[in-house]
Length: 231
Image (cartoon, rainbow, N blue to C red; front, side, top):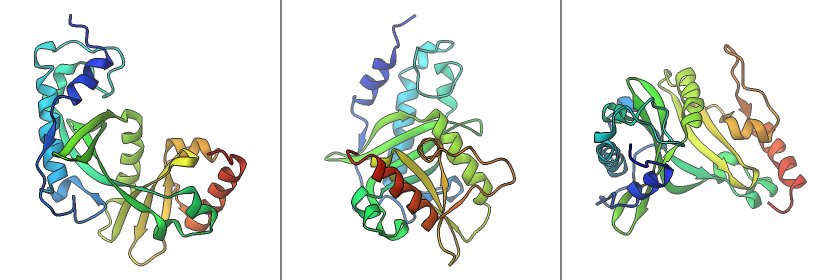
């Protein structure tokens, strides 16, 4: 068996997975559903990057290196993996929150896109794409727990045509959310695993909305940030 520790993953990602990009933005929306079949440069590059990564393990079927970041039984399954929905990462700064700014209005795009990796309809991780001098590059694979958390939100609210999603981070509070906006209504937020830990919340039971009002969320986040002035 080859020595396929996590370092091999890092080496594979570093081996030229950049793809040329068109000058247009990565997508027409902040959260692109798989059914949209987007041909945005970042998504196309993500699909090619995933396939090239899978090809590196083509001869290692039946094996799984320690610390492998995707939720598979063995690396041979990667040949069946596909790209699902994708989203741009938005950040809200400590300064904006502490000034009383609105999260929806003050969330800033980072230019980073993350894509669901799917195996036979089951989410197994997230693939991260970043814009580089050579185009779009696959910079990481992982997020096996996070992708399931996000899929729960998408599954609960993605069936409504008027619903729009956005992935929002507050790095200084170690918290991330899915912003859920339905029509003209004010945005609400589904706390993901890290945010639930930060805010001392439990995962929402099935049947409950699990969504926080923006004002309530901002108040909680300001309290967290105020208690950790070094962040």
